[in-house]
Image (cartoon, rainbow, N blue to C red; front, side, top):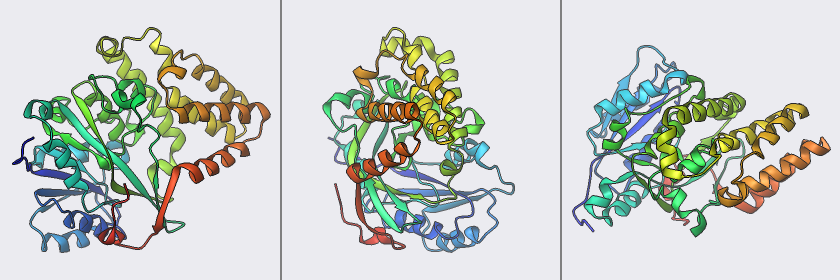
Length: 368
């Protein structure tokens, strides 16, 4: 244990037209119990009052830095914005917080303390630290926390990427199990892979692609702590472009497999693993086509999913249940079964914390 381990953490925040939320985001960082941080905010040419609000906080805290794009890069070039901030980052470890999300007060402290308990050698081998997340449902004005389904010994090697490469068993299914703003990334490892990744452009995110590359560079460290709250509202990219994003997951998985097949097979040592590529994304697409009553396409995708020989061995239980429910709903041609299943899943796995009020994190009590 290194008692003097107090690294500078560089928190990268990308914002665009977040005038209603950016103050909450910034203050959730300013409220951190761990003080050694810098916050690098990149504004992607907002057309509202976001830049003005950020500038007011620049006067309050010298740890906040501000970069303004003259031209909007948009969601097709998120990596350009994140890598612009990465070049300015002075910290050894990189955090990540979007402009409409918020940290819990001990978010950075929990991550640093977890790293502090490692030897210098073990810490150097860590690609990233991550934990749980909560959600802010803007329509219902409710905050909740999904109960992680992978917190048991069966999945310990996968969620901790131990030995290095084990997380690929899930990433290459098209399964992004790491909550984005819960991470603390080893900057040396991130620079080694060339910074944040986004492929194809239409995937409109950098986290999943970046984590997949980092899975070949070092172990992960999972913390059973709620580290941030993700705001869900109708304007989010993932809500609006679900089908496009899932198809992009498939494109990325096939691209990564084609370019790193030798390294992957050295790490996971499974035969016929190619039949498992993108099955999580295929299942999500099958559900979307089922909801559109395109039963033939849904059936074709479900058949492809079942070609994977390792579903029983290492796939999460929730995947198996989703697959079973989707097959039944498609066979009976009753899409509403998916709605009932989602309702019961949320009743069982999602813990309601309370009602949402702006700046609620200031009074947040540990729930883990």
